[in-house]
Amino acid sequence: SQALEATEALLSAEALPIAGDNAVYGDVLGRFLIVHDKATGWGLLAITAAALAFAAWGARHATRLDPRDIGRGMLSGLWLVVMGVVVTAGVRVLAGPTAGRAESAEAYYTLLRRLPWMETATVLTVVAVTLAALAGRAAIGPRVLSAVVLIAVAAGTVMGGFDPILIGAGGVAIALSVWNQAWPRTTWGAWLGLIALIFLLGCVAQGAAPEAALIFIWPALIAALAAAVAALIAASLKDPRALVPAAIVTVLGGAWIVTLAHPVFLGVGMDIPGVLALMALLVLLFARPLAPEHTKATYAAAAAACLILACGLSATARFAEPMPPPAEGGPT
Image (cartoon, rainbow, N blue to C red; front, side, top):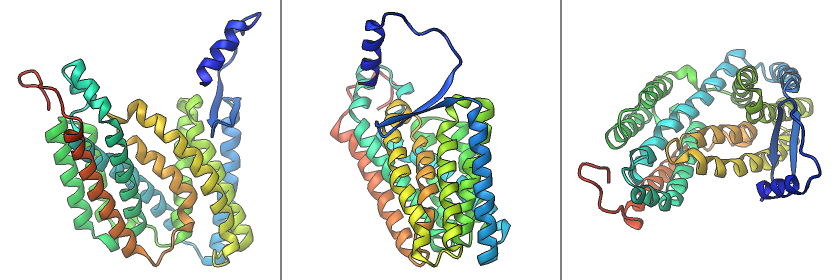
């Protein structure tokens, strides 16, 4: 609808817009647009760094936070992304070949009809990986996590073809799964580590492609400000009022990210389902301090249930929307 409205406005305009500098913009819940010039991104990153530093100072003063735990939190975020890339790829191929391997128009349109099944299965897979990240290495076990990675890589390779990115992500996922230093030990370490990771990604994106950096810069800024306010209210996080900022940004920021996730999946999710793992990381960026620390076994059980259901839904797509007879030697 926005494209049609823009087209209508251009057709009825007395004069067309003149060329100007590129701007950074993004839709927020269909209500308004974030618009600013490219250089503003660096200023927003500076504010993010200041808020992050203040929150870290408050956390260290109140809880003796070990700075190394922030590093562990960053690694846990990296684990979520690479694990999400691997496991979503393994679940995705249960629904059929990638679009690039479809040998006919009929096969491609069949894959499009399977897309709702793929998206639902991918969402459940990403939820499972997120719950596993909350459960932690100790609750699930490094052997179980490594086995899941190996199975997903094997499925993706056998049914989807050789993919060096999948193999590499699988190796990183296994390494982080078995290394006990990749898992934060405190709520502050986990939360600030995720913010720091997205902050670094925002810096890289701002330097390489400032028009696309908004997806990292604004979530990092919002989360860092929420962390700073939480540290100001009660840096120990034992006072429920300290979690109110996180709850507010989870509702608003999380809703924004979720509304972006669906069109992103429609655009590239058939071949790159792991893109939703990044979206999950951005949501967790807001919600991490709200997760209770004493229910890790529940997280692990819920993660297993979601992953099993995801595999079932993805495989069901083959029967719900059967592929037309392929050419000899083609995919099924």
